[in-house]
Amino acid sequence: MVFAARMTQRGHRIRGMDNLMELYEKTFTDDTVEAISSLPHPAVQKFAAITVAVTGASRRFLAQITRHQKEVQFMSASLQYSNYAGQADFAVPYEIMASPREIREMYLESCRKGMDCYEKLCGAGIGHDAAGYVASQGLRNVLLISATPYQWKHMIGQRVCRRNTDETRIVMLKIWKELSALSPIFFAPPFTGPFCQREQCLEGKMACGRKLGKEMRSDDILRADYPLLYTAEKRAADES
Image 1: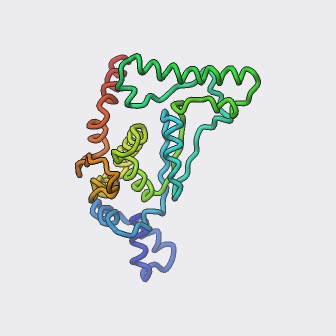
Image 2: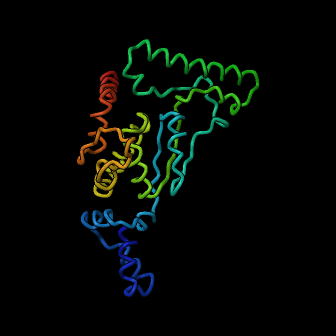
Image 3: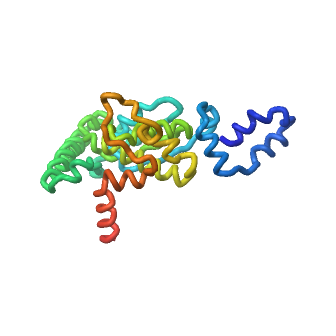
């Protein structure tokens, strides 16, 4: 990204590949990244791809996130070729996670019934693809997402907004956390967060009215909005 930006300004100095590679290998500072991140034209942010693997998110998340099609590619585990008989696991929506035990069991029992039917259909000779129509939307999935840095910022900015569904927000907040570790400046809240963090909400009458603090990073938002995730992680760590 920095190389592409510099190249546009130094064409008169580049007379061959040696000059080009010298420019490519030139070091840069965080200030350089911040300056490029704030530019109004994002072309230089589109000459790379970052691929992220997501395990455990539901197939409903898959249906939502694949609405993004520009500068992004998806590869998902296939219901046609995968055999989930006896192997199914389910994502639990945060609202249900926060509900009494009997509600959680009601949800999981419904998911299991669908997969019981799936196994019976497969046992009766029905192919995995057709049998997959009875699978729960909560069925856990494996997904690869490859996108340009610019598109990652766009998707995160849209999908961590409090107007989105809980699972989509949680997954995208966790991705944001990992990308921030990769480049803390480039993926900082002023360049990546939802509109309410960067300027002002653009949703008009559809605004949620719960503005995120300008300095809140992904971990801060996760802890503020989804504290049970950290309780569950601590319990799992204590039990291991």
